[in-house]
Image (tube, rainbow, N blue to C red; front, side, top):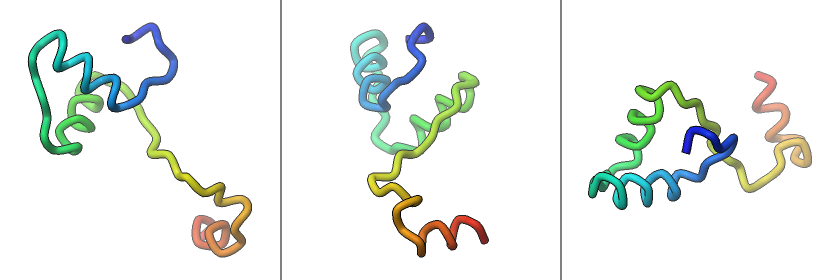
Length: 61
């Protein structure tokens, strides 16, 4: 998994289940695991904020 430049959280969950039979019920546990492993992540937005003036102004504050 380290060789991949982009991962999807569900892929990590499947990998952990298959390799180690580990399932995290809370998403925060997955994020904590990523942090401990030194892996950074971004939460995706489904709406492009550059197309929404209100969101752009909110991010600039």
